[in-house]
Image (tube, rainbow, N blue to C red):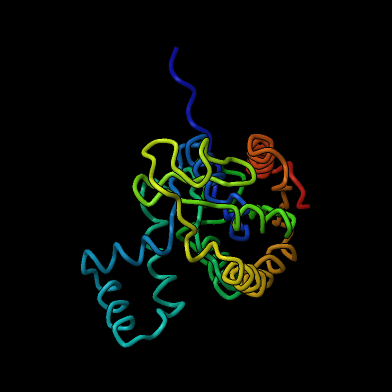
Length: 244
């Protein structure tokens, strides 16, 4: 019997503060539906590395110490979403970062290139993105981040509160003393969480107003979070979900 065709899922945007588990869930979504995870940071580096027209423009901007403009980032995203591996869906990582980018994305996906006729599930460009926000209690986020320890040799990550090494502050695999990354220090974490909240709130509000924002309790066990996200994605792609 022939294998069942992989279902079309469409565009997926994950929102989640540092430590919310967004990276873990993105990898699980990508594996389950066999769709690419598209990082704007990776896109930018790839275009610069390959010396594309957009990459050269971005390189000139960065060499001046300026931020790459929305127009340049959006053009890179547009090129990437037209690639064949995005035909059934994709996960956007790090985009959109602003309400203006979210509005651009909706317009782009509703354009003639991506005719917004949701009744045809053959191409996920035919509908607008589902947005899943992973919510975690602030105190639990703080424990996840401040308790994180990293092995500088093999890169394995531990958490002294939830997944400690067998010997305190020492890697189980190579015996290397574990370190606290600069980003995981308490004062840095507080600023990262505050910055995330400031930057992400307008994006979340944009999608909430559109009825496409789904909130998931990230305090649940990882597998339960995954199953909830899978359910929301599939219900949305089938046209049977309402935002929450």
